[in-house]
Image (cartoon, rainbow, N blue to C red; front, side, top):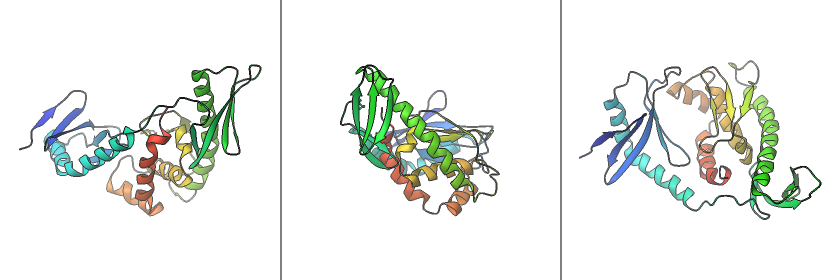
Length: 251
């Protein structure tokens, strides 16, 4: 027997055996959603999009129908995150950029301004004093600078064959711990600078995903058909990107 319980602020859950599957229900009136769509985020959160008029009972039924799939993906996400430790921002730590691993090298130079540069196999962070917050800010600024350049270049390439994109859209950068990017109903792109840590194909997938939202403001069958037409291998790339999320998104 399955018992459903209603939470607050869009939070709901269903029982799957002895397990409780918690999810956030999103009803976005400014974005067309043609069906109930279930997403398991890289950190294990479950989000469900549904048309505004869909009865809650139908949403719960859809979640129950896919409860085994959800449970498996949530378990996999939690297993990936279990061994992840926060960064200490010390020499020797791994820094990822365009799918390759580099080593952080912290250099204290009292007379210099804080900055980071890629030098061979190292990302060298030069700081006036050995302060963790200052080193973190230095690395964040480096990621932001690299991301702005890489995303601008790849947006031109990815958007070029898309007939509904007249010119590469402007974008803003925002560090996020739960998603790679987003597209507002008005067509504004927000991209996570940490995405620049991923291989180029992962970056291209995220950019194309958001560009497809300029045509389909939803996750409908038409949206995924468009995504597949322009990136047939997107599911493999997304799975690989999600598998790497705990390394790229940790602070």
